[in-house]
Image 1 (tube, rainbow, N blue to C red):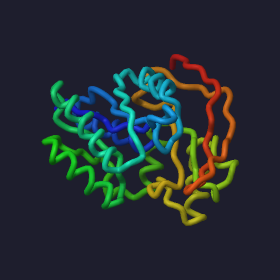
Image 2: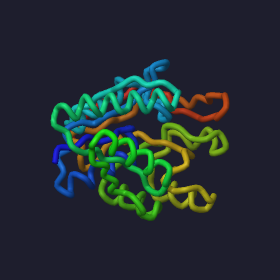
Image 3: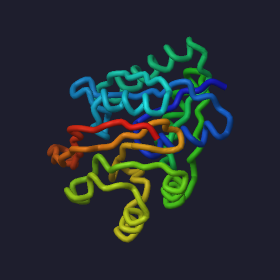
Image 4: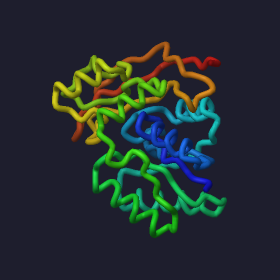
Length: 224
């Protein structure tokens, strides 16, 4: 079945996409939502152009849709995007949810209303095992945003077993399923080229939910 991959550019969406491909699904496009105000990926803070380059490294076309912060509007925009892709022959969509019931329930309801199959390859996996699989399969990712209490030095770190141990010791979900942190995947088994970040600076965004973000200033792409 031709499917869409819900795409944030981070570790969970990448691993879910990879698992779906190994299960025989044909992932024909990546669907990414970006802020209409900032032109960056929602929550991750990655510029739309970098997301497009990441998709180019994978070799799967990316569809980027602007969205607002209003949940009702987001659902409408989400359904509109799914409807456009469904008309092109897509019958399913893969998501990277791990254990949050409210996320899965929303996904399944919306997909059902759009007559699209929701595929959840990571669902009910133990979070630590998800990270271990991500590392063992050869993926590489950098932390690009985190809650303020995790600290300025947490952004910019590569996802590895040291980070996994630190998260467990601090009582934080290894997958950051509650929004503790977000990542950008730079390389992996679905990549034909890799992203090398050469310049980046941490920036604190204040507000209702203060977060550190990694502002990637420069990067290169190289063949593997």
